[in-house]
Image (cartoon, rainbow, N blue to C red; front, side, top):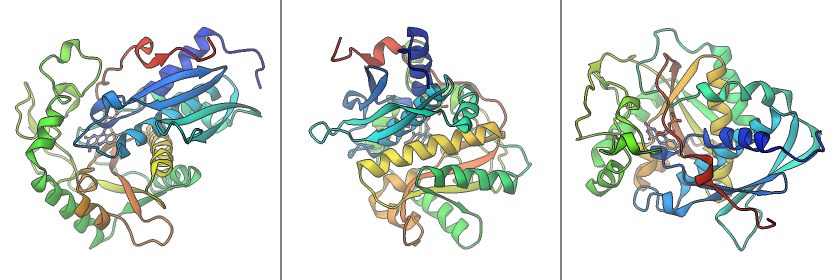
Length: 326
Ligand SMILES: Cc1cc2nc3c(=O)[nH]c(=O)nc-3n(C[C@H](O)[C@H](O)[C@H](O)COP(=O)(O)O)c2cc1C
């Protein structure tokens, strides 16, 4: 391990990795603080969705994803880390400390780091080639290595049942949730914004809607957005955890990031169809009846991706707070 303190450039690299993580509607609901060379990760409740994510479950998932990405940043510098989740009972929003260890960096993490910049939520149609079975195995392994389960839903009747739940949840979505979302999706001030989902990242509308491609802009016209034929039967995965508390959501986030970056490495892209998880009556129906992993945290549409544009990120100066020791 590298025992010299991190240089400003190295810190920047780790923070850039962390903030490349996905977050619901690109809210980026996090802030960070250095404690020596360890990195603290906190939920920023000024950037969470009061109506769409009242328990901050998805904000925790985003922070978990940022934790995993930060670990890749450290690993790219040859530095091994371990994660301490929810390190302070008195501060529940202090969700993780990424701690530098004496152990060498995991070489698999060093490799994965290089796929971070090309990972994107991909709402475009996928290529007709299916995701290779071996790569699906790698994705399952990635989820398992982080203590979760990626259930690939392939067989009938489970596949159609899941799509039915997604469509049902879309139909049941209440107006106030759409109103809250509209502040983040193709916002009118998009050119000045460094958060939210710009129109160009929404992807075209499907001419043959199956439900698997979520239209985040329902009921709102997006300039220049056409419609196009999508793949008829995308691969769908459900990321599941055993528990359903803050620690489980953080675990889900780390696993999500590991799955997504592993996919990116092999050309596999993902978008999300989480509508039924946002509806308390439907969420339980999405989970498998597996004994150990039965709580659904994310619904992923997976396929071989084409290139899509990136979403913006806020500058590091906005997400970094001063060290308490400074
Ligand atoms: C917890 C969570 C929930 C999300 N839910 C959805 C969703 O239901 N539909 C969707 O299209 N994207 C969803 N996203 C993806 C975000 O919109 C995306 O991460 C964000 O816009 C940043 O873009 P990027 O992933 O390309 O960096 C979700 C992401 C996270 C972390």
